[in-house]
Length: 208
Image (cartoon, rainbow, N blue to C red; front, side, top):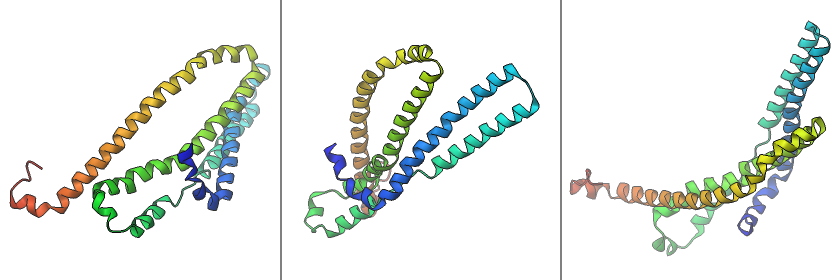
C-alpha cells in the first residue's frame, strides 16, 4: 500500500470527477440489479394476469433500466497526468543518469510501466469499487428474496479467498517477469535500430 501513496497527488486535481465517477458506479449497479428484479416481477405478474399491456409495461421498464445503467457506466472513467510528469522528470535528470541506465529500460518505464500504473490508478480502482458495490447490493437483494437459497449459493464462495490469494501471487510474479522482458525487448530494439548501419555494413541482418 505504501507504493500507492505516491499516486494520491494525481487524484487531488480530479477529486470531484473521481467522486462523481464512484457515485455513478453505485447508480449504475443499482440499475443493473434492478433489471433482473423487474424480470422476476414480470414473470410473477404473468402467473396472475396475462395481458399485452402488462408485457409492454415491464418490457419498457427493463429496456429503460438497461439504458440508464449503460449511461451511468459510460461516465464513470478517469485518467491521470502520470505520463507527462514522468517525461518532465526525465528531462530534468542530469546527463550522468543516462550513462548508468539503458535507453531501452527508460523506454519501457515510459510506456509499459506507466500503462500498468495508470491501470491501477484508474480502471483497477473503479472495478474494485464496482465489484464491492455490486456484491453488496446483490447479496442484500438475494437475502431479501430468499435467505435459504442465498445461503446455499454462498457455500462455493468459501474457497474464493484462498483462490484469490494463490492466483494473485502467481499473477503478480509473472507480471513482473513480463515487465522485465518488455524492458529487455525495448532495449534490444533500440540498440538494433540505432546501430542499423553497422549491422548492414557487416551483413548481420539475418542474425539480428
